[in-house]
Length: 338
Ligand code: HEM
Ligand SMILES: *[C@@H]1O[C@H](CO)[C@@H](O)[C@H](O)[C@H]1NC(C)=O
Ligand SMILES: *[C@@H]1O[C@H](CO)[C@@H](O)[C@H](O)[C@H]1NC(C)=O
Ligand SMILES: *[C@@H]1O[C@H](CO)[C@@H](O)[C@H](O)[C@H]1NC(C)=O
Ligand SMILES: *[C@@H]1O[C@H](CO)[C@@H](O)[C@H](O)[C@H]1NC(C)=O
Image (cartoon, rainbow, N blue to C red; front, top):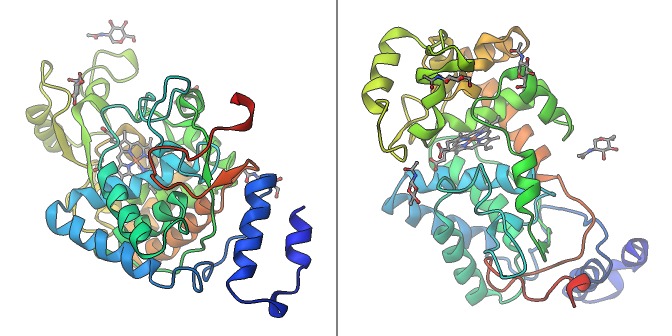
């Protein structure tokens, strides 16, 4: 079926008809889709401008919300491909991903995506997928906070379902060490370099005390803090997150939390990583070389980060899809629940 769509002579029909026809084939068959930068150039030429505009407004309201939205790409793409499954609210018959172990009380700024979707539905109703919104908005979050800008591929479809179980099984713990992170990323064909570069996303945003309590007070069950934390930084974290703290209190993931730069890697090299999964990238020899490279050469970091984001954005599984009207709810129900 997928081949049939591609065999149609593109130049014998209106430029609008071809993408629509191809979309229909994908919606019916669930075949993997072909992504390209100009997918919406005929059907919604303003798409990129609209997304960037809403992200700019979000930045003006709350700079951190850009980090929060950028994190969506990771939590979406690793769980059954980049299909906006993580944006679906729970329904009486489906446990979504919003309450999974890694996402509950943690993922935030869903309303920014809603705002983007509303603006796009006004300009070109039913055309731009929520899955593509996540990809465009993540890129914009990086570009608007001082990081690199790049061209993204689009044309993804939105899933009809979500899986809390898949999210629980796949998403890594903040306790993870570099070895287990390398293994996890390898399952997605992401290299050690991709892992270290993509972790550089923690150059913006914040984390909760909840995510570092074990590290502060009982690393690996030793009853002691992680020895890799630099002593002055440990004192600072102890003040932020004392033993009986409200674990929703948040701290910065690096010293410049609203600027996308290579400060994160400099912090790791001086024992000032926030999460265990951050600091371990410097502690373990398999990843330390890339931390050193990125901490001394921001250009190398940006280049590797773009590469990693594009590879991560390519992740997809074959499943039926659609263009959701509202990113929180599927338009139709999956066939097996009819
Ligand atoms: C390598 C494995 C990773 C682990 C273990 C991890 C874990 C975490 C944790 C625990 C937090 C703080 C959550 C909280 O305390 O509520 C966080 C925040 C964040 N993560 Fe990751 N992460 C990883 C990779 C990534 C990747 C690949 C991206 C994006 C490309 C990303 C983007 C972010 C961002 C931007 C934030 C800050 C969000 C905000 O301020 O709301 N992370 N991550
Ligand atoms: C890394 O973490 C994995 C999974 O928790 C564990 O089995 C392994 O022993 C750890 N490796 C090292 C070197 O600490
Ligand atoms: C990784 O690459 C292999 C070989 O190219 C491919 O068969 C596999 O589907 C890829 N895995 C993912 C998760 O993309
Ligand atoms: C530290 O962790 C170990 C193993 O998980 C546990 O047995 C111990 O009770 C913990 N200690 C404290 C003070 O929480
Ligand atoms: C964090 O806040 C949420 C509500 O936003 C609450 O349900 C949860 O229990 C709090 N978690 C902790 C660890 O205090």
